[in-house]
Image 1 (tube, helix red, strand yellow):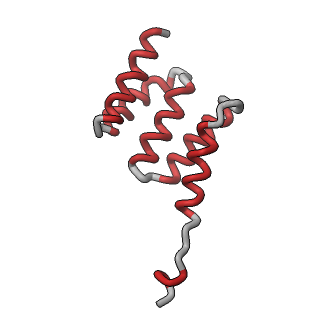
Image 2 (cartoon, helix red, strand yellow; image 1 turned 180 degrees about the vertical axis):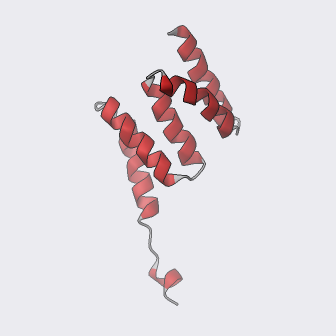
Length: 93
């Protein structure tokens, strides 16, 4: 379990330093082992990469795994607001 925490920390550092691809490689290994925090962090990586659909799926999956954790709800709300944005003046000149 300590080794999993080490990988989680490495993934967080990679994400903070601007290396989302490296973070994904680390998190892929942990998600396959059933580590729930890896699912949430992958959602954050995809959110940072602006891949809204994948991020929303990861956060929804995390919500199924950890229903009491409210962090994923915030991300889902932000993503839905981004996807639902419509500015009439921009799209109807």
